[in-house]
Structure formats: structure tokens, C-alpha cells
Picture (cartoon, each protein chain N blue to C red):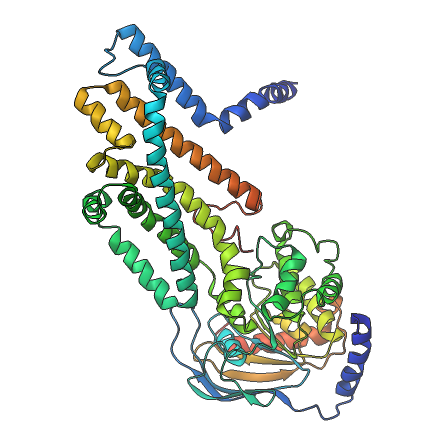
Length: 279
Length: 275
């Protein structure tokens, strides 16, 4: 199934959602999870106790200031950091070890300099012992979907920061994960590049139904992308409010300044102001 | 107009200026050798105190058979010692990839071992291993191994924690991680450190020969010093320098052939292999 077909089938999923029909079961359930003290080596902040539920095929964003514990929470969901108490379940199964069926994007693209752009995307298949040749066509389709078809055979050092992040995104999606976890992919980008990347993330997410969780401190991008925004407090990590974003999809970049979008951003800013995050 | 003139002048002087920048070290060395030669001839410095460069070259040519038969053994010991240091660094690196605790332990051990003066430890190795190639190789290894191991473990420690997390999330085994990611990523650092450790390995081999050997460039130096043959001392020293320079050039060529310009290792940076 190519990306166009996937997009068509995915549109059915979105139509059901906009009609406010009951959504499928929860993809992620975090029940009073807590992660101990700040890890000096990794710099991960302590998190919790907190509870949240992210539904199947939902795009959820954890928005909070640096050090609020959202990255720790994402790592707990991915099974990279053990929860010191509480319970996390992904697709019904308790998370006890790193989940290998998920797509991971970090704030650094982590591309290997000795591999081409396509080679970096295919690395995800090679490390999972999947047939890299069989995934070659999908890798090229993913790269084409984010405008990197011409750069497939280029060296990664020749790419700009945004294109490196797009390559990392394609690598995370190569093995068709049911869950995409993104830890502030906008961090190394300027405002314009971040908006552009957000549009690409939305395009890829709409093309194939999957649950996506994004941790970021960028309010506008979080509102642009998400079905629900979990507004997080600075340490101790708490969820201040869950805001459902009722904006039609696909969302366009020129709607970032539209009243609906701006109102959601203003609500989040007001919450942050009330908790001393913003002055 | 003045601007155009200056620009023209800059363009005219562009090539020699660029050549000068690129080969500044070589030009400085040639200038120093010329000054040395001139000073030796003008002031009539005795040859058995400080021979001129031309005299040293003549001495190398005159005693080429003796120098080559002894130099060959020194170069062999230094090269094998350096290669063994590389293998040791690779083994430590692989162990460090498997376990962060092993990496931290290796790091502490290299820091601690760096406090032992290698030249002072050389006689112990010679007592243990006796005369011959094995003891010289061991001393060359002991001089260079800490530097190479430290370089590889430092490169590993600079690897972002997110890369290890991402690799864990792919479910890839240790062998696959080393083969696909860490091995190729460490290779530029290993080659760079081997190139930098070349003088150390050569010093190790020479030290072993100076302490206890009946062959090798170090032994020739001891003989030259005992007989007051300064020309032989300088000839042996120049040959050792040439060996280090030639071997460094060979490793540099290997680096270029293997990685091209895309993976030039920058000092203190991991960014050149990881974007």
C-alpha cells in the first residue's frame, strides 16, 4: 500500500473521529507513574506521580517547560526508563523493557555520517533484522513524502537541520510502528523550520493511522499537531490540564494565526502564566 | 579604483599565500635546516659535536646497510606494538559498548595507569620477556596503549545517550550494534589515535633497545654515544623520524581512502561521525 492509498484509508479513521463516535481503546495508559530523582548522567528530570490515557490513533502532545519531566515520561512509555512506581501499559501490555515496535525521534537526529540519507533510514530495518531491500521502496516513499526524494543518496552532512530531523522521522516510521514517540524534534530548529517540520509530521501522521506522542515546549506546534494537549507543570511534574484541540484536519500552516488556533495557544499560555512558567 | 587595485593584488597573491598557509610547517622546517647548514659551515662547528644536515644525509647513505638492518627491527617492533595497542583499544571499546560499567572502569584504569612513567616500567617488561623482538614490541605497546585506549573510550563516552536509547529500542543485539553503528563510528577515532600514538610506539621500541638490546636503532644510538660518533646518533634519529612521518602518512592515506572528506575527525568532536 503506498502513501496515497494509506492516506485514503486513514481519512476514514479521521472521519469517524470528527463525528465524535467512540474512539477505539486506549493505546497508552499511565496509572500514577512516578520516576525517581533526577538522573545526573542522562539529565532526565524526575516525573510524576501522574496518570494519563492516550487513545488509539490519537496525536497527543505533552507541553511544558524544560525540566518538567515530559522527556522522562516519554522514555517510561518507550520502556527506556523504568517507572519507580505505578503502571504503564501500551496497547494493553505492561511496559517492562524497551519496546521495539515503536518509532522513536529524539531532539537530536542521530544520523550516521558514513551512511547516505537512504542508508540512515534503512538502518532501522537492518537493526531490526528486517529485509532492508524489501523496505527500500518504502524508505524512498517516506523520503519523497517529506521532500527528500532527491537527497536520498546524499551524505547527511550536506542536509540542513530540518532535513536531518525529517530523515530521523522517516527512520522512525520505516517499520510501520503503531506508536510514534517524539521527544522535542523541534529543539534544534528555528521557528520557520519548526513550522515546516510540523506540517510534514502531520502529513505523515495523516497518511497512516498511528498513535503519536510528542513532548515539546513549543505551544504553537503542539496545538497545530495535536488532538489533545497535556499541559504540564514545572517540577514536580504534574498534568495541569488536558485541552482537546477541536480544529479540523488537515491543518494548514497559515491557520497558525487564525482565531481558533490562537485561542488554544492563549489558553495554554494563561495556564503557564498562572503557574509562574511565563511572566 | 583603489579597491579594484587591492582586489587585483589579492588575487595575484592568492595562490602563493594559500600554498604558504598549507605548507607552513614544511617551509619552516626547510628554513630551519638551511639555517642549520649555513651556521655549521660559517662558524665551522665541529662535526663530532653538531654535524650539518648535509653531513647527516651523507652518513645515512654511507651506512645505509647498517642503518636499514637495525632500523627494520625497530620499525617492526614499533608497528606491531602499535597494532596491538589498536587491538587492545578495540577490545576495550567493545567491552565498553556492552557495559557502561566496564567503560567507566577502563577509563579510570587508563587514568590511573597514565601516572606510571612508561620509561620506568620498560625495564620490568624487559626482565620479564628477556632480549629480543617480543620485549621491544611489548614496550612499544606499553608506551602507546594508554593513549589509544583513552582516545577510543573518550569517543565512546561522547556518544549521545539518546543513540544508546534508540539502539535499545530497535532491539538490536550487541554484535549488530557494534557492526552497524559503533564499529564504523569508532574507526575514524581509532585511526586518528593510532596516527597520534606513532611517536610513542617508536619511542617505546627505541627505549627498549637503549636499555637492553644488541640490535636496533636504539642499540646503534648507544654504540654511537659510547664511541662519540655523533653522526651515527643523528643518522639513527633522522631515520626514526622518517619512519614516524612515513607511517603517519600511510595512516592518513588510509583515513582518506576509507572515509574521504566526509568523516574527517575533528579534535574533541563527535559531530563529524554523528549528525
